[in-house]
Image 1 (cartoon, rainbow, N blue to C red):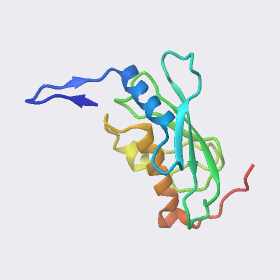
Image 2: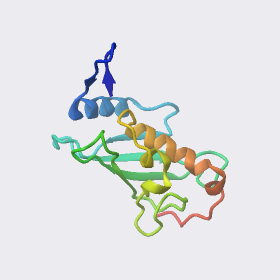
Image 3: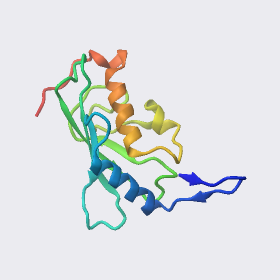
Image 4: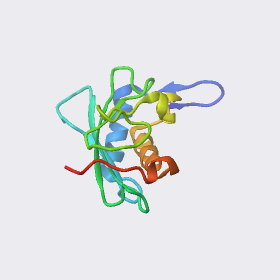
Length: 143
């Protein structure tokens, strides 16, 4: 996140940015079908996060709850976090064996910009679930 006018910009430090994201995640997002928070409140580097997506309506994902792990390395937000589904899911941008969201197959990670957030990633993943190639794919059993 940069701020300023007249050609000057201020780069918000990593931890301030993550604190803003934490506050937003704790307040809840939009319709409540996407949420996220930090795994360990004692981790001063705020690296490990958990995200939750409730599957979109009118898809095979409806009424399913998906858990994800997001890992923000020291280069975040200049570089995207790594994202892995803890819940089993079958969509085109996720490795079926590891649950890792493959950056080359998922636009927001492939074309990452500093202004993007973990919320943006989760919202885009939910949209990806509802996209025509994924909306009707057979899913692994829950549990």
